[in-house]
Image (spheres, rainbow, N blue to C red):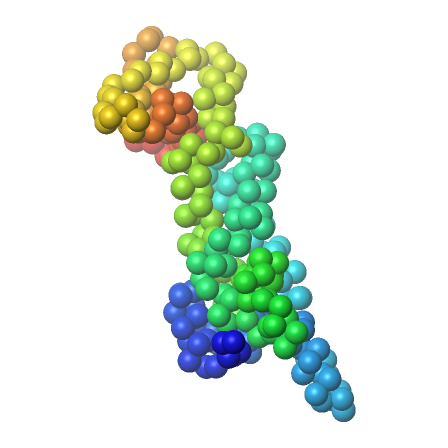
Length: 259
């Protein structure tokens, strides 16, 4: 049986390096990593103590709220053309337990958890619920330690952007957000011509082809105004990504960001 791993100062430094943030208050990080089982054991060992031992439950509550706000803000800015329903579905994925467990495992949070003996013996370091709770608590601790902008930057770096980019490039986004339909509706509402989708390249063996698709946005006179160009393992995926580029172009144009 392997020895219980405790959060010594050296290990905390390792986690801080992985996170990209050195805590001003190291006690906040220790609290974020402390499961209630360990805190209750500490209280039992000190029956005369006047204060409750701190665990990560309140920090988890705070971190969940900060994560939700950062995700909402990023999606609001990145996808101004999306409906409330589309934004809600995509946010739900980004803050879901299924996604957050992957982040927690990538950060190896299980190494640093402070667990009671019973939780340790029952494999608490690999329990999804404990890892996700600890991740949210760490985010809450960063917010308290350094403020919203630092928390926002680290949430984007570790939690949101890698998954969001993979979600879009892999074509999985089409299950939640249909860029082609969103573009069609947007152009229809503006009485503009629908885009033309052209396959400009097809390479690779039959079982592993890569398709390059152009989504050509037409001006009122029929001239090409903008071209979104994307590759994908299927024509549908490439079309979706090309449509997304056109939507981003239109959004930037509306905001006066295009040249």
